[in-house]
Length: 166
Image 1: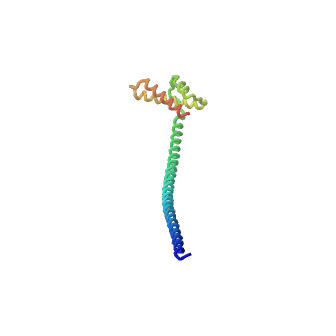
Image 2 (image 1 turned 30 degrees about the vertical axis):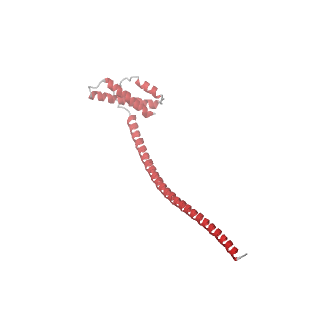
Image 3 (image 1 turned 60 degrees about the horizontal axis):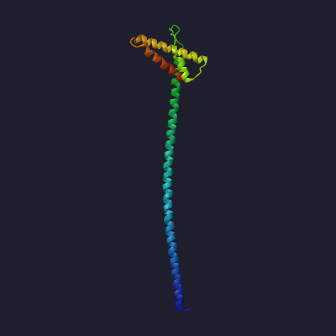
């Protein structure tokens, strides 16, 4: 081999090395860019996770507040219902006049399809008697009101009472 051939082969080998180095450098740059993009995505996802966790904590706090207020409202409603039941279950005054009842209570009971025990029926009768007394007292106060208005009020009150007993 002559010097010229050796130099040509060395030049050829050097060109191959340079091309290989350039290809490796390009692929390294591409991988580095992809790595940077992935790192940016990771940081963005971590930010989203932290935002979601803070939102979750806020929502849990709101749920706790709502549960507390629901429990308070429930206890208030229960206490009001027990007070109403206490007022409704009080016996009527023995000297109070009693009036014959119309058959509208049977139709209300048939509408609700409910059966009551003897104590519940007695309690309902006592409540209805006290309601009739209230209507009579209001009738004495308002002499201009007609009896049909009183019947409507009695029907309304009876249906309301049946709603409480369900």
